Picture 1 (spheres, rainbow, N blue to C red):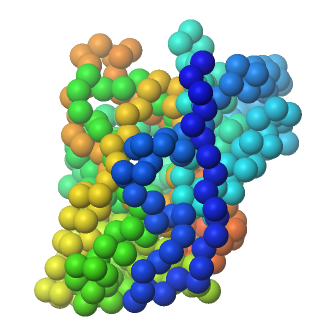
Picture 2: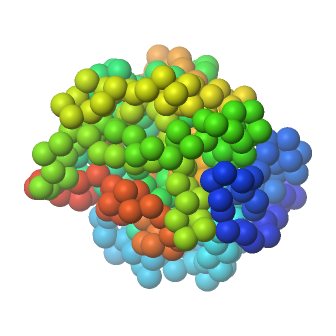
Length: 355
């Protein structure tokens, strides 16, 4: 097996100020990580056996995925490592990739249970849509992302740089596409710092509490089809960023939503241009698992062409996780992300395929 390139960051974050460069390990650059791969943790044979043993135990007990808790998925070998990787996601660079989980010849349940169990060591699963899905399936269903309720993860469309509506999002790669579908990510902290250099006057524009479409998924008691969040915020010295993507543009024209100003449009344009310029391409392999904090990273995907055979089609599993207040956040973010997407009367479950 190849040498494990993983190396933890300093995890030291001086208090942040939106009008000054933000210092800390989450302000990473593509050039450094492409060279040293210190964000990549390669699983050892012993750690893989540890995962397989835990999967076999829960499978024998026959629980539904959503019933599995951290205490049900004990990992005597890998568990302490995952605790450290969680610290890295919350207090360090903001993300980690695990590589080496075998998927060939193993059932979908076994791989999903391994992913779910590992996710339990990072956070608590929350709903990803109005159907109450705790386990998502990133797969092309022919969805139209430009529609008011369209969701990009069910389309083959290109996705702009964005952050998911949760504390941590996780992906587990089952199948890759025939072509395209390049996963890209960047540090939103580095985007902020670069904006300060190039267009300092526009940074303040992104502290506005932007209106965002709820995509037709209204929490209990809510009647407005939109919510509000700043793109840049600092709370108790902790920086957080949100995406400046389609949810903002799709709110335009909704009742009660003002038109974006020209300065806001320019700030959003510069923000997205810098994100694309500094982003790192991620070459996923089957079995790869990523865990990414949404407040210091942005991610995107290029358009893809899928295989004609159904059994070969691009398929990734997805988790949205809450870290339950592990770091300070703007009140708007806590309100919208603490419990994921909720609608009246939904039943939380973890389907093993697109439902």
